[in-house]
Amino acid sequence: MLVVEGVKNGIVIDHIKAGKGIEVFNLLNLGEADFHVALIINAQSKRLGKKDMIKVDNVMDLNLDLLGLFDPNITINVIENEKVTSKINLKLPQRVKNIIKCKNPRCITSIEPYIENEFELLDQESCEYRCVYCDEIYKIEK
Image 1: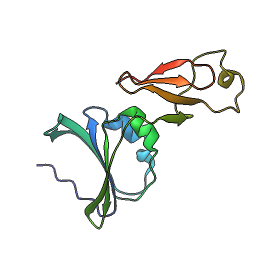
Image 2: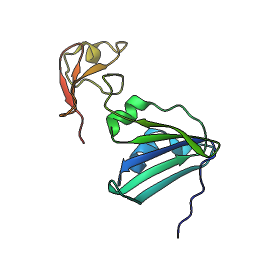
Image 3: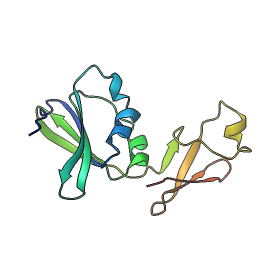
Image 4: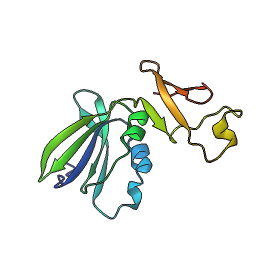
């Protein structure tokens, strides 16, 4: 049996789609962490069958927009004194800056490097975003 210690003060990133945990781990640069981090792959899940999860024994800021874009089904559990004090259910963010890059070569963000890429959610079901400058559509792959 595999035993992973509990988190005293930190976060648990739960309900990551099985096989995608390493991508979340890399998105958050957890390979460079100097505190305890556990990446669990293919854990049993009643809801998903299998899931990945990441346990971080440290308080850290997370880019929830980035994680929401990656997988809006992820749950963040905040742990204090070994107890879950809050749960954050992610969703697709309404507006994102500098996470998605506009693919339109004529967009001002492609021409002027100091202008931030900015997209707004167009449709929750189809996961489509629209560039606020040129209306280029960007679809998030599930």
